Image (cartoon, rainbow, N blue to C red; front, top):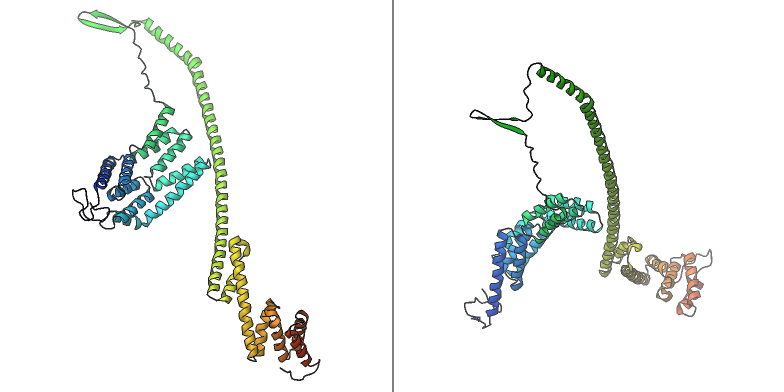
Length: 467
């Protein structure tokens, strides 16, 4: 046992030999924790898993770092089919004791077995779906889902109990009792299982033993003949001679007559009744099956509609996710100053699939890209113009004017007109000069535009342009 404060090994004293901390209460807490751990271990050995779980939880309340109790609790959860809870306990145990911890082996066995992890994942999904069906009053679908869960994870006590509860609701007490017996084989003294069994016993009652039919005693006559005791029926008669023959004939006649008039009609009537009853039973069974088939078809159609809706929602979600991925990519490219690539990424975004906050980001990036694009393009065009590369300057400045013809307070349109004039493309330069004079009449650009327009040759004149 180590000191909770400095980690030193403790002895029998009530104080730590290194730091002097009072460890009396600390030792008591660990002793109580170990006491409840031993109780939990004893209960687990007789498969009283619920009782063991309660004892182990008490043990961990007194001392959370009791790795023996936590590992055993994880094993109990695993035995009851609750693998996620088991993994949680083993991970916590591993964090409390990193070395020489048996939980390492448990975690490795589960994590290295992909089939177990897949089964756990599917079990959780199906159990949650079964609960959803119960909330929607779809008991039949919930029963089907729970049967699938039990087929893949037969130790999940909760699934057995929920299935039994649905059977009790549907008054199928024999099936409910069967599910509860399966749960009891896993956890012998589970209180929920016992309560459900008591509910079934209360609703069905106990079968009373059938009384045996008393045999009728035959009337008899007893008499002695010498030393022997003779017992014979009271109605025994000793017929002899022709009286015996006559009695036989009379008996045959009566028997044939009774058979013809009494027994044969009863047999015929009984056969007819049985045939009618059998036909009625088959008709009722057929009607019930038809109703059940129609109900199942209706539920199947509803399930198919739900599946189609889920597929549609999944497609829409995927499309929206792709849209947000493109927006994120554009945002990253923008901050890396890759404006052309960012603009290409923005071109593939459907604005209708963006929410309000994402739309603001989209508009902000678009506006920033446009501003940066205009600035870069204008500066490059102006640099080409000053370097007397008029064709390149005209191409770049035309892009700026196409987006914003008032950019840089008219300088973009003015230098574009200058480039076209020097390139002798007067039909393009003239309307640009006129636009500068019209929109900026008081600026120096308008004065220069008037002067440069005067330098332009009249139509048909081929004089060289002046710079």
